[in-house]
Length: 392
Image (cartoon, rainbow, N blue to C red):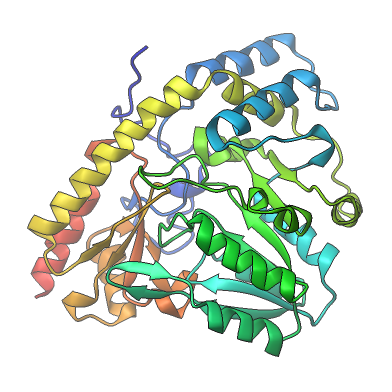
């Protein structure tokens, strides 16, 4: 089957935060939105077919997992990630950020430290602070165009700040790293040695650029498996974020009970029936669509790389190893961070995610989502190039 990823679909007035919050958040009405990490494509036909069948059934009562869902999930995790999962490890949540909040409350007390590696997905920081924990940051650093972990700083910050929980982003958003097994092993060893539980956000696990390979955190070692929560979702892979469904693998029964107890306190119990139906169809039948999507994303990456080289020569693309989010350094243009952001939003009329949203290390960077039709991507990049050229 052939799939169409280049037809432009107008998302305005569809309750999409990507487009319909522009004016509310001070953006121009005709802004091109490539900020939030959802895709501008319909999901795969098999998922739509399953959702239509559920709609035709007409009953949307309380839902529960069944063997067909578990079999689909188990098959996907084994085939795609070499991870043998067991049903007894699973706790569902309406999203990974919800799961992060549960983990913070389950595994730490108010005032205790939670460590993140900045620049990183900004809800990590928001959840730590909203739950009255101490935010501890260990900066990634760039060397020869690649962002790396400062392991010495990471362990020192843990020991100095009474850290009890580490929120890992793997693959990493926004710098695009796919951590190697060796890197993850070092992180795990530090956390085990210092009694720090690991929450691994692996929502981008299906977007890895060869020859890189995603390693599920809990497959590193028995110690890692016993000391971690691994959170995944079909939402990024198949553009299902609005259906509110994610899965957490917790092998340690004591950790699972603490996590589940915190989830129960929220009043959230049964999973979204439409999220469940969509995820099951995705894991059962979505691979051909995903393969075609990855080809489109590779084409968009190649286009963006060439565009930057020829028309944005003072910008620098950080070569991604995974995700569909690109991390671009605009410092060569000489603007302050605020000036750069204002120029891109108000003059170019393009809405990206400003780098400093992810931490101070993101100054003069911008994150762009390339999961969009080529025409939309080309329009956005052209607007940025023209605005920067006029500003010189």
